Image (spheres, rainbow, N blue to C red):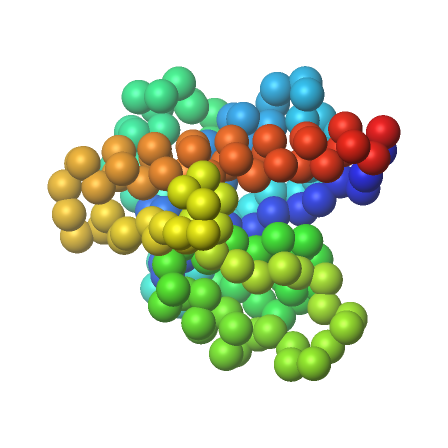
Length: 169
């Protein structure tokens, strides 16, 4: 059995997209088939604009519409120690990915644990990585679209981890 992995989701303010991804992911890993695959799950932002705040009400209502009613989180800013604590750090878009790589990824380091990438690498669209657009300034549909993407990406990531575990067993 492979070692459990830890996952961190990152957007700009940690109240919309990354919390959506964390809430969706946490709901999926309750399935017994994933219990030996995933360890720590968290989310954060590249900015500290909303540090300490709850997720956006629209994020929470979208999660609730899909039966996710037990998610709680206080926004926080990413920190350097996250890159040694988490196996996967998933950015929601290219701007946040660039910020993570510029500010935190250790250049030429073999000691950094985290694999930093777009969450949309798990889009299921072949070589086309998707971004999760920030729904903050838009309407409800943006939150629904973010939910659907986070669900698809999470399922694809978990399926890949499950296949890896089965091949190692």
